[in-house]
Image 1 (cartoon, rainbow, N blue to C red):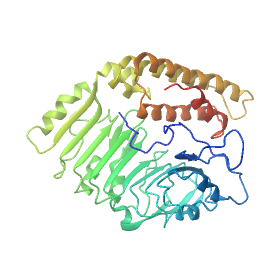
Image 2: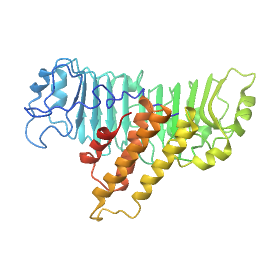
Image 3: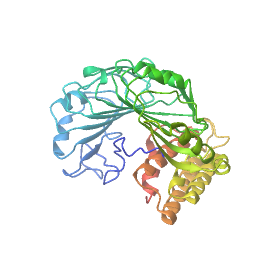
Image 4: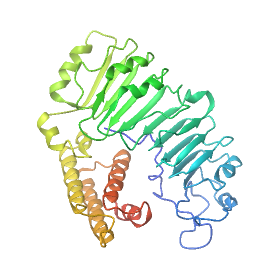
Amino acid sequence: MSDLSGAFELRSVTPPTVEVDFGAGPHAMVASMTVLNLTGRVPVDGPVDFTALDAFPQSKNILWSGTDRGLGEALRTRPRIRFLEWRDPVGDIDLTGTAVGTLRVLGCGELRSLRLPVMETLLLSGPSRSLRVELPDAGYGLDLRLFPENPDVRVPEGLHRVRDLWLRVGAEVSASVLAALPELEKLRLDFEDPPGRLTEPGALAACPRLHTISLAGAYALGADDLPDLPGLRLLELHGVRRSLAKAVRDRYRGTAVRVHLEGKVSDAWLDRNLNNPFRNWREESEAAAEEAGLAYARARAAAEGVTPSTPDRLPRAERALRRFVADLNGIDQRYGVIETSEREEAWEVYRGLADLFHLPPGGEPSGWFDEDRTF
């Protein structure tokens, strides 16, 4: 399944969400907190006094949103901050001279450029085609996680030496986007939507060092679709039609390529659940996957006909979204399937459902998820 636990998840740190109020009040936190959620807690304009961060000497993770407003400069003098999640960034961001080693950027359509120190992990969700990234050695040694939010996939300029890429896309993607990464060695490609098609697979030959390919949800892949890659040593398919599994093994039998197949499903089951965003949960329980899919379909149906001008869209959204979370609570109680990665998947699906109700980002809908969930 598409495992997101490796994408440094800040939402699941205990306590799940740490809110910081730069003054007194019900959200004032204790000095032992390690994750500081500053989103929505800082006034929208005016100067920010980042010396308040010093009241939390054990904090290593920061959640921030919007423009820089001096955050980069504040982090340069606080090397304990190693993890940063930045939501909806705007303009140009300079983190050179900081100790940030893991950066997660969500909703970066208005981000023009990133200047970074030596990084271990960089996650970009929704980057624009014009985004420029500057970091030492053009990303050599970087674990890059690229999650575009539309079919127009492009590796940002400045990352041409990346060797390790996790690419998460929708229904299909062309392998030609990898031509910008001639030193690529490991590719993880997750398809979030059906049919899971890799087009122009021959373009993988532009990556002669590629030795590991991991595909999740590539249900449209044929046994002979991938080109012969001399350096390939490991092929992993997470989610594969049972009717295809033998043909894949036969193709690579007797070669240097080790084949790992996980999540083999019948064509009939897959046809019923192809549009189910929780179909990968079948690895733990097919019943849980189907029930979660029904909960998702019910919430989607509640959003039908809702437009930005629908006057009661907020209460309609609250009823549907809270029921969706309650349904997931029940599924977890019955089957025990929701761990870290599944919780992150549930959150992403929840956010997508909230968008169907044309609600503004953040605010009450984000809070309902954490208020109601027991998983």
